Amino acid sequence: MYPRLRFHTFSHSAAFLGGIALVVLFIVYGTRSDYNELHPAIGQLLPAGHCLCHSSVIFECTTCLESVSGVSRPAVGADWEFLYGRDDGNEGLSREQCAHAFPGLFEDIEKAKSARAGKKLEKADLDTMVIYKGMVRAMVYAGELYVIEVRCMGEDHRKKVVATLLSIFRAMTAIPSRKELPNIEFFFTIEDMADDPDVPLWVLTRRVQDEMVWLMPDFGFWSWNLEGIGPFSQVASGIAARDTDPDEQWSKKIPKLVWRGKPSFNFKLRRALLNAARGKPWADVRTIRWQSKTSMEEDFISSADHCDYMFLAHAEGRSYSAALKYRQLCRSVVVIHKLQWIQHHHYLLVANGTQQNFVEVERDFSDLESKISYLLQHPDEARRIADNGVRVFRERYLTTAAEACYWRALIRGWAEVSFEAELYEKDPSSGRSRFRGLRVESFV
Image 1 (cartoon, helix red, strand yellow):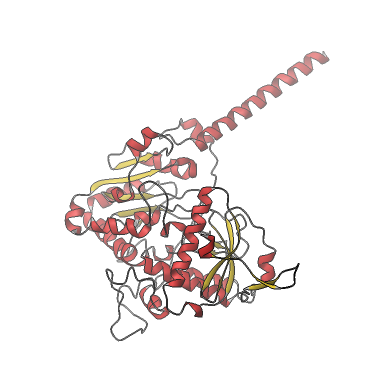
Image 2 (cartoon, rainbow, N blue to C red):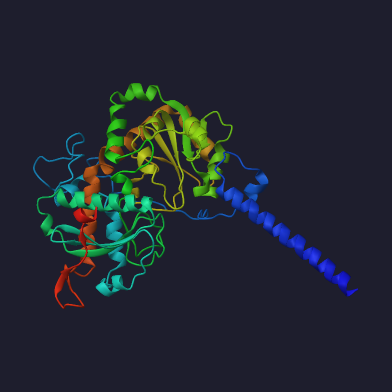
C-alpha cells in the first residue's frame, strides 16, 4: 500500500508541477513575444506587469498655456515675444525670457522643491546613495560641468550618459553668465525606471508617488542612435520642412491610426492596443521586431513618415516611452491612453477644451474605436487638435530653446534645496588638495 500511495502522490505532484511549468512557459513566451497576435488563452494568463490599470496621472494645469494663448504675460521687455523660426533654436534665452516663453514648463521643478521643503539635501545624503547601473554623479562648479562617478553597463548606457551630459553642457554654455549658475552636486540615471525612487535623483520619468526624484529631459533631445532618428532638432526641422503648406498636407493624410512598437516592453498595455485595433479599417497598428530584417523592411516607419497619418497612437513602455515627443512633432492627432509615467513636458498636455492638443483614451483602449470614429466624422475638430499640438509642442515646448531653459531651471531649483558643491578634496595619501571629478570635455 505504501509504495502505491507514494506513487500516486508523486504522480499528482508531477502533474501539478508540470502544469505550473506550462503556465510559466506560456507567460514567458507571451511577455517576450513581439508577434502581432497571441492565442487568447495565453493573453488571459499574462500578468499586468508595469501596467497599473486602475489608476493614472491626471494633468490639471489650467494656467500653463494661458501666456501662450496671449491671456497674460510676465514683463520681459517692451517688445520681446517668443517667435518660432527666430527663437526656437536660441539656447541662450535669459531667465526672464524663459519664464515668459514657457509657462508651465517648470511645474515639476516647483513640485520637487515643495516636496523637499524643510529637508535640505546634504553631501552625506549623496555619499550614502547606492550607485545602480546607469547612474552618474556629477557637479556644476563655476559654470563648468564635472563627472565624479559613473556606472555604465555597455555601449547603450555610455551613449545615453554622454548625450545627457552634453545636453546639460549645451544649456550651460549657451548663456554669457554661466559662472553665475549655482554650484551643485547631483546624481542622475538614464534608466527607464529609477532603482530607488525614494532618493534625491534626476530621472527621465516618475510616477505621482515618486516625490523625491526630479524630472530631467531625456537623452533623445540630444540624439537617439536608432534608425531613422538621430538629433532631435534635426528630426523636428525635417518634419517642419514637410509641413510648409498645412492645408495641403492635412488633405493628404492617411485617415488611419498608426502605431509601431514592441509589445514585450509593456505586454498587457500594448497588447490591449493591438487587440482594440486588429482588423479595423481605421487602424494601421503593428508590432516591430528590431532584430528581424523582414519586419524592419515591412513594418518600420520613420519618425517623419508617421506624420503621413492623421492619428498617431502612443503607448507607454517599461515606464514612459521616449517616442511620444517625436509623435508630438507631427501635425496629426496624438492619441494617448491615461498615463502612469510623467515626463518634464507632460504638464502641457490638454485633453479637452479649446486648447486640446491630444486625445485621451482608457488604458485598456476600450473607447479607442468610438473616439477615432467620432474624429473621422468631425475632421475640423481633428484638425484643430492637431494644429494645437504643433503650436504647443513642435513650435514651443519641444524646441532646443525650451530644453535649455529647463536644464538651467533644474540647476537653479536643485540649488535652492541642496548644499553647495565643493571642487576640491584632500588626497588621503599626500594631504594635498585635488580636483573632484573630471571636466566633461575630458570625460567625453
